[in-house]
Length: 500
Ligand SMILES: Cc1cc2nc3c(=O)[nH]c(=O)nc-3n(C[C@H](O)[C@H](O)[C@H](O)COP(=O)(O)OP(=O)(O)OC[C@H]3O[C@@H](n4cnc5c(N)ncnc54)[C@H](O)[C@@H]3O)c2cc1C
Ligand code: SF4
Ligand code: SF4
Ligand code: SF4
Image (cartoon, rainbow, N blue to C red; front, top):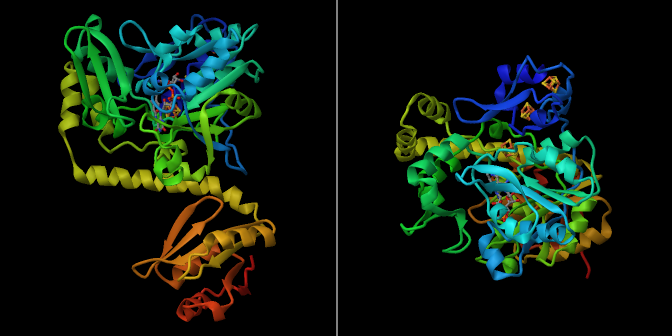
């Protein structure tokens, strides 16, 4: 079968979504863990009837790139009850959506803990059950037969399915068509760490019956990134994820699934109705909505998603899509792991004392590797962002560079002027910045570029297909030098006098 070839040739293509195992009519597919602790399908030749349904269902084998020509409507949101908000990882959007489904007699599916603190997909039929699904778990969850359960429930109930983007894609491919009763909610996904790494970590920290609660996002000190483990009789362990052994391995991408480094299912290739995550950086783009108990960001992909979102009684505000990406690059871009990942898992696989190996990589700090990894992630982000922006830029008939008066900041006024007077144009506002540089803001995306010289501006003009430079009447200009400098771009200069 093709899925077997894919796993033999490049297992990084398999996200472990388990759609193949769920679709198999003969239960011939078992998800078995490899040496890194991630599950991959294994076909039992004695049971397989070669019907081909696994190949036809696999989201990786049947992946089709989407070309989006518009950004998803984007909101920031918070739940209006203090207790729920504090117990949710972000702003509690998951609970608000789940309540609509549960009130209607429906079922909610998501990732919870089992009695051994392993992470599994499970269901909630009421608000009490929902507690186990609330809060994120930094571990790849086991789907088991949950897609089959969803299909069954959809016969007579409303269903909310939540999970990673690859799991939402897995469910959609398993079902084969959309269903009015189904709402799919994916989380923004940095990547998911190996269940084996988690199990060794939590096993070392305490036997299962000693642990009362695990919270990967404790808000004891507000909305940040702290892990908290509560014991029945040993108090609590509370520390920043970046200083915690498990958290640091995860955040550096060392313990994540190979597919997460080339994730196919991020925006715009999402197959869910809604994407939810943290509104990181909110103080820069919607400071009035900041709440130290957590704020969610929500991306709406379908009419159904919009309808459900509008039924919640969340406190919301619409924001610009691109603004939310600056501090949350994994909305659109995969996590590039640091260069020690291969060595880490090789050591992890062959050593009996796995916790010692985790400690070794936790303590081994190399500033050069950290710097290099950051650079690679930044590069990947820029590439992905430009790929998303390209079709949107192409929609404009005219891309105009607007040189903004260097003394008086007229940007808002000019923006309105251009909106009124120019049809279908992309605007780029060029402003002299400090240290003799120039910044250029793309208004429809809020991206900012920096130039040092006119050659860089000319390159930029070519790359972004700028058709004109607009400047105010030079008589009103206080900087003739800026105007002269602009002439060097060789773009047609157009003079205008904006009137109120
Ligand atoms: C592995 C992982 C990586 C993440 N990376 C980012 C990121 O880079 N940027 C960002 O903004 N947000 C990230 N998040 C998502 C985010 O932190 C919250 O989970 C999300 O905003 C939901 O928060 P909430 O307050 O609405 O509800 P909560 O009550 O906190 O919601 C929990 C939701 O997360 C789902 N969930 C929890 N654990 C898992 C899991 N292991 N696999 C699949 N689904 C799970 C549950 O099913 C439920 O839908 C990540 C979450 C996980 C699990
Ligand atoms: S070919 Fe059919 S029977 Fe064989 S593993 Fe795939 S789905 Fe199962
Ligand atoms: S269906 Fe999912 S688990 Fe199965 S091979 Fe494809 S990606 Fe892997
Ligand atoms: S990063 Fe992509 S492949 Fe990895 S768990 Fe998240 S959605 Fe799946």
